[in-house]
Image (cartoon, rainbow, N blue to C red; front, side, top):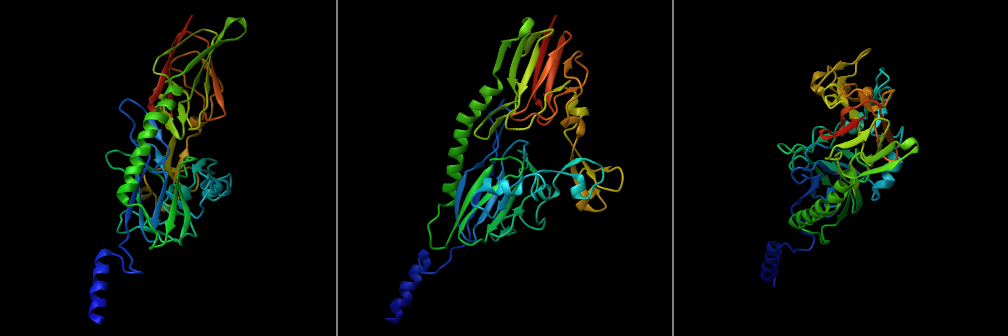
Length: 376
């Protein structure tokens, strides 16, 4: 009988079915963002897949997959990501995306990206599956601010050590960019990493073929109307947006108006600017990076450039985010800027002199541009 017991036990061990036996931790890859079809300037402000079930102790590989949009992969102790955002990302809250630099030790009356958002919660972990950051279900674990790069995509590895329950990954940059993670006990069933990847691929396909096309259609839509005295108002959108897919584009076809007409640009659910001339993307950066010091801050490209790396800051350029005093189209080479435009805000340019004016977005660069032809 004793011999038979050991034979059965050995067989069960091989099959992984011994009661209480713990399988080796699995690594599940989820994608942040994705690459748009060639010729389209889209950002997928989503996780793929949108939900995940893992065993306690498994590792989540949050892998960037975009072409330039910034994101964070941030695990929070709440099953409802939007509730967590309402409680933690409002003005003055600890995870607010933008803060006055006085709240981050500064003295220059600027707005900066919150250091808690920009920097990893623990820079010593998270770079590989062998050194994941541990999430215990009680506090936030943050990757820090990372940009997608098709030649070298970032990744952030998190070991889900939290008790069984439901938690969330969020992007601290983009509202609505969330991932629900169900942590189950070792004896419960969970999909395989391959099944999760396949589901993510199916969801990305839908995002491309349906929501991306819807967003693109909105970005290319131009509506004409009339106002008093015969002057026309042409309306377009600052990009297109559908189900957290952003078409970071202005219309491909030039817009023609006459002197006296107006061009209205409606905000969307991603931030943009409408700025003239096109060369402004080189002379008026959307953000500047610096070391926070007493008095005027010093330029820097990374924390390593600062005597104290914790004083590295990403500041919003006031010239980029604020509108110019005049929004008149009077000279194609004169700097005219809407400032930040997002829903429900809008901006209106008035055509005063003939010429061809190139509008560009300072946030998304030359790929988001169009021409306004003003004729007499």
